[in-house]
Image (cartoon, rainbow, N blue to C red; front, top):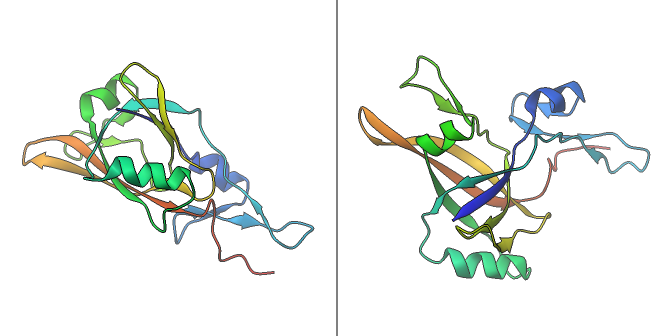
Length: 160
């Protein structure tokens, strides 16, 4: 399975005065209509090989695309070698590095191994990364597990 991911550009979103450092998410910026405008700035979309670790993922995504899912949460597993090949791995002193995924990255859809679109997730609510963590056995942590959940596109805490 291949996931199409739209990565959040935190620096550009912060420069647009639309990044909440406390909650680590994009915010709404004031607009003339009083509702606010999303401030999210994205990087280029990228296709990444993944494995979906959810028993009924197919049914959940199918229901979500039809607007029938009250809540969708999936676990995506990525191999570090794939992340390195796609320049989505940052080397550092902690257990050899860390992924460039951040909470707030969006999953746009899924393709089969031949690149054919299987599912396109709706924009609102979309599927967003809510957790990114390494997994594996002690010194051989070679997998990254990302929890993705549906949520509104941006922060709902904007006050008029």
